[in-house]
Image (cartoon, rainbow over all chains, first blue to last red; front, side, top):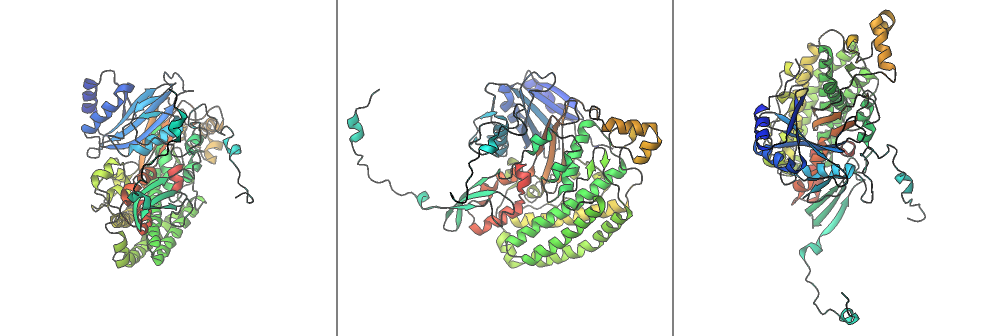
Length: 169
Length: 412
């Protein structure tokens, strides 16, 4: 028997009451809420109040080459309720030229590095983040490598690294 | 606005600013190459004497763009990359990856495959905890304990080598099944391990659990409260040592975990010692699962049927049945392959380190459009400054070891 996650209907109904314009969809038993960008923080705060106390992940998808995509970036917030084991996926779509969302660090400290990673690899600005620096790429790096217009082999950054020889060190 | 040059010339007569306490702090660069970091990660510590005032963790020294590679390798190819994420327990990563892929594709595994994957995931957990606890022992001065742990890791490597030919980078699972079935020799070796391992575990506990030096160095060090554990998204043994009872094996029983009797090891202290105890107990519980699974291993095929066109058929099926031939053709041609929905899904397993999940976006191709890995190590490393503040320099290695930070999984 495959595992069936607990229903989240009551939470979804409450969310739809409170936040107009929220779209819901279900795939493989996973419920997803698509919320307009300005409401994302309020929605996550609302969910946290309703018992979704664990922020599992913050991530992003770049829909540049995706078939029938309407937006460029889709943020993914995965939240879970540690008491009832319910899970929810929250999607927030943002676009160029200045993709920005409100940071959820005030709600969850765990979002700190996750949002830094999204900023680093996708170039999404998190408004109100206390320390939005690059996480995995070097500080002087300028591109955002997980964007779809960034090639797999890089843009030659590797060849331009200053080489320190034994004589000069 | 123009400023008269005379204003520049006026010397400032302000007295020398009083030296602040921070000016007397000493900065220590810990890593990226240091025997006690075990991998390449860096900590910049601010010390006042021997006390750590603050720590600035830095990562990225091992960043290899695994998520970018995931957008260019097919679902079956990418399993080789997951081996290199948490290389302490590659089997668990294999299982996590293909669990996520099968969730996206909607594949229901055969009972035998579920059991096999459960067994190897639990063996991977044992070998991960052996290394993790062994390293904590090593860093706090218990070398013998470390050797006991590594001897048993060798036995598990041996089982994996017999199973799939690779000791370290197993790449064992496939979409809808596994690369090999359990042979009688593998089953025999696992049975022997189940019989002999508890004795070593007893020895290890006798060596360290009540060792005065070890307890003094780990008890009350790096305390994480339950609220903070949830707030900082801790999962796995780190969260369970703080009183969070979340364990995906119980809470979201994937694979065959529903069929087995086992308990979730928890502690409430939240310090390094509690994390050590939780890992020790988890090894015993994992062994219980392995013992039950190996005795009740269902018969039947490992891979899903050829009618589903998800796993490669056997040689015999290809040569003797039309379905096998078609299925083999469909799966091997570059313009055919799996039917992937234009959808996105997330699936996670309880990896040895915590919740290891993959968020996969499919766009109809055999390659993931986006393969996000939710690594437990990142969130655990992020809380390091919080845990170490106020402790001494020698506690750094104890806290770092008890969090079990694996840089390859941290940076991906």
